Image (cartoon, rainbow, N blue to C red; front, side, top):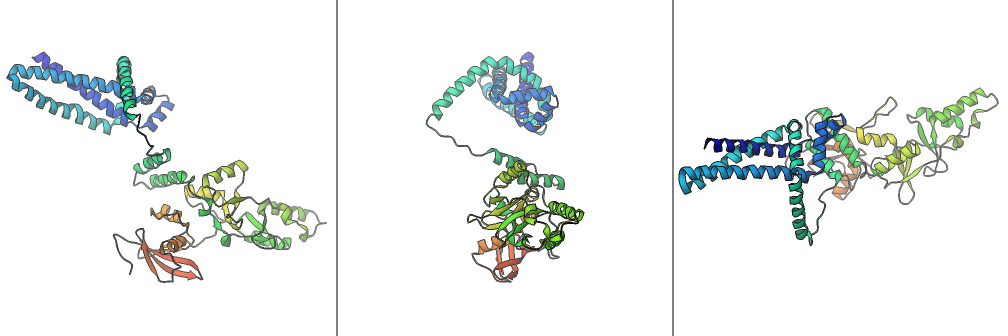
Length: 426
């Protein structure tokens, strides 16, 4: 009897090993194992190879686990019957259920899921040998399983519930951390995934905010305006601002000025500004940021002019604009301070109507929709279905919006108050 009890103990330990191995290997971080393999870790390589054939791995572990559990239960039943007769079956069932549940399932799996990476690296040589040893049996079982599945799935249809992009988004959100640096990295990763969905029209600099120069002016006047501008690339127009004829780079103009100064024969007004300008590059407003980023790289360009479906000039988009969508605002010594968001003492925000919804969501972790409007002013007009008057208050998406300033039909400034719970505007 002592030998039988010792055998049951050994079988329970093997069951715990199989249960913990299954949990550890399935819960181990794939990115970490991939990186360890690249660094030359042989055990990580074994884990990755087994994960490529999970049917063999799971089949071998389940085969071993069920084998030892059934054998342990059979031995325990024989012992209990010898001691208590027919009632021993019930005693054996109760005792083995508790032992297997606690010591062969819950305990090893709890430990394994908390130490999945380290445990998987320790047990992988043993598990790999087991998989190779049981390979003929598991192949036969998997062949039978596939045959049964084909019978039941013949008239059924399967639908992919997610995409790789959605899986990545879910993984990013799962790795929550209070560390500000980690939070910034998560925001950048989300922005990278958004590049294929956001159109350039949502991040463009609107034409009313674009610095442009009349190419028909005297050359000295053009030089003065370029020097007064904080930008290095400036659109040139002729006749009317809609007629963009080129994009002037400040460095090209400076070269021409230098050449003019070196040549005493030339007069100041003899510089042909249009000949110095690059050919304008027009793009449709429906272009996604990912496509535009690839085009910028392909053409070695940093500057594009956006037009709508009627060919009207709408604004400009630059390489820096797209990079800012990923890493946040990029400021340099030549940037102009533009009114944006001002935090008030009472916790509310005074926001310029032209501030984009994407910037607000990224900065404050708000969840304002940006499908129908690109700016906070556009969102208010879309939600209210009207052109609001100054002082009017609206509440939607967990925020209270008070119109602070309106110029003609344009919302210039909005006071935004975060609210808790369901409240009605006053």
